[in-house]
Image (cartoon, rainbow, N blue to C red; front, top):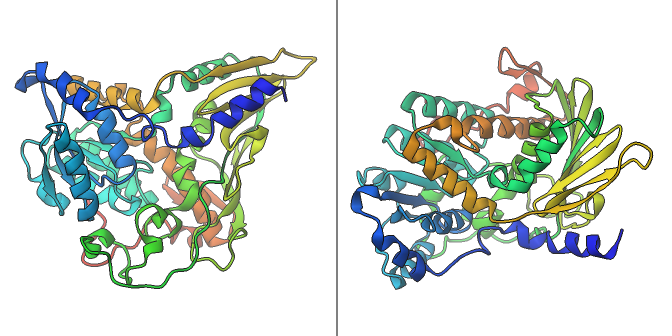
Length: 438
């Protein structure tokens, strides 16, 4: 590996993992740019869940001149008050809510951003569509295959624009890589790989249950999840390691990376999936989702392989995340920083790294707002149908792991051929909540 390539790979990992959060601009300059937009041209946005990527989404949307942030909602008043303060410094006044349903009642809100933990995505998205709002929803769209189906049905019934935050679909170099794959220069592709080795996502230590922090409306945070005492390990960022709220790295990063593995092959659903892994990095830790996992997806004529690990950074081709398309003539390797072709010396020449240019997140939110205005749903870079497809494929991997079986999918019936696997199609709803019936 030459020095330039090694330096590039090193610089394109951790920083790119937080894209959007690291590209914030002055709120004052954003507010100034909006003064020239008339009231009739403004699109009013309300955001639910504004601690992490939800706030990155809000900040990205604020860069669009016609977008106006008018409402914020979060069950943690500490987060809510801080975000309100940040906007107030720039002269942006917002109405704040603890209960998302009150935000949805606000007739002035045109668009709802959903940045909550995964287990809330479906309920809020469906109810937002019912309220006549367009939606920008963080990934993964649903926390179960049944939720994905309900979300697609709601979008179709209420004809709302719904974009899911798989912003890699808006990165130009990603699109360029897909176009190269379609040329056929790689020859027959027999193996596709996608991986996430996330060294910065450390395993967590066991912590005792206790009272929720002041300002945290814990019952509202739980929503449809199983009623449990408050534990800091399950709150904010680390919620993704517990089945009640999310699906671990498989759904957290898998929906980004497996998405492109599927796109590159024009793939729909695999014939079978077998997954194996466990809590190998922290066997005694409180996490429920596997910190190490490998899954093999069987398609006609090729396999797709998924790998992930918490606390380890060194993945395939020296990259902590990415996809590779391994063909007869050469291999295309792609990640958020760029793409390259490693050619077979006898069959094709290698192609040097084609670097990423621009912010995928900003291009993604811009695309969404353009569709909100045009109502041309086919122009969305990641519709709820697109996002549900890859989320379902990722859930298949998790279901194989949880059931301990190789699973096979019946496309016509929309379920597995194995009864044990079908038990995981829908997440259990609790505390008076139920899966939306659209």
